[in-house]
Image (cartoon, rainbow, N blue to C red):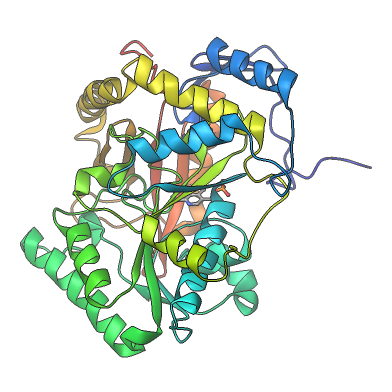
Amino acid sequence: MTQLIHRNLRQTPPAAVCAFGMYVRDGEGKTYLDGSGGAAVSSLGHSHPDVLAAMQAQLKTTAYAHSGFFTTDVAEELAARLAADAPGDLNQVYLVSGGSEAIETSLKLARQYFVESGEPGRRVFLARRQSYHGNTLGALALGGNEWRRKPFEPLLMDVARVSPCYEYRERPAGQDVNQYTADLLAELEQKILDIGPKNVIGFCAEPVVGATLGAVPPTPGYFKGVRALCDRYGMLFIADEVMCGMGRTGTLYAIEQEGVVPDIVTLGKGLAAGYQPVGAVLVRDHIVERLRAGSGVFQHGHTYNAHPVAAAAALAVQKLIQRDCLLGAVTVRGATFRRMLRDAFGTHPNVGDIRGRGLFLGLELVQDRDTKRPFDPDLKLHAAVKQKAMDCGLMVYPMGGTIDGRRGDHILLAPPFIATEAD
Ligand code: PLP
């Protein structure tokens, strides 16, 4: 039988036949409240008329023009807008089709930067355990999620790894949070020294960790310390904001809240809020200037780079975030949502932690609140939670992470920014 391959090869998911505002409806007429924006994508809700109109207008003028031949006003305007709203001199923008492509682009750009800087010996990336940066081979190699990597290990480049900043589970009982942060930074520095600073290209991390840990923010000062180490050893700091960026945490870029400027920022998901597949890489001026003055080309490129309709969708989303003051709304609604979650689950025996920023919240599920013992991985609790929620007409994004060889489960909540208290 000829058929579409789904993620779960044994189960066909319900067909989404229409989606509007906070809801998605299936072919049986059942309606689901979108509590996770899919996978933290649909930040404006579904069928927003302004985004649809912007896409339609673009389709009628230039639906597609290959970026090897042409640029378009809409792509230039989007780039200018993203750069203007980004911290520091992250002024150079490369547009791709999604998060993994953004990561691949950032890896190649960082490597080419050092090749053209006369430091071809720099060839190692550093990232964290229990991280996720995408499913293409470079992005998968960068990520530290053991389950996702395992079958493909022989195909993946070597990436050096350090501990995630994951206070709930990894800060030793009784240890001061500043000491915990200092220890993490010392571990990172030691890793750099072990590899040899002149061999390291850069360090990649999510400012607020999404899929693998469930909306885990950094400890105070962690990213300031990361920035300082990158500066000390001449490495690049890549902030992966594919999931946490574009307003989800209450600022357009999640890293703004850490008071540091990365060298490269990757975007996806919320960039066009699901209306088109699009991703972006923001780069500091001096990196692109080096290539411009050197070879004059970035040795990369995809057929759908800077796709005009995708750019139109993303630009419309950016305008709506500003016009409707959605960053402030995320902060206010996020605080309300968090309070409601605490009221409902704060003392639940199987909810170990409630955390996150803005409308990017996570609940960690445990067998025992005191010992933080996770559930048995064979239970596949996260899959059961997802199914139960769908049965109840609710979309949430549960995940099982790998914790010291065991699995811990969490539920990620990332509703559209238009969610009301009633939703
Ligand atoms: N980086 C992060 C932090 C992500 O969460 C994801 C996807 O979940 C990606 C990269 C990959 O993005 P995509 O699925 O659009 O390729």
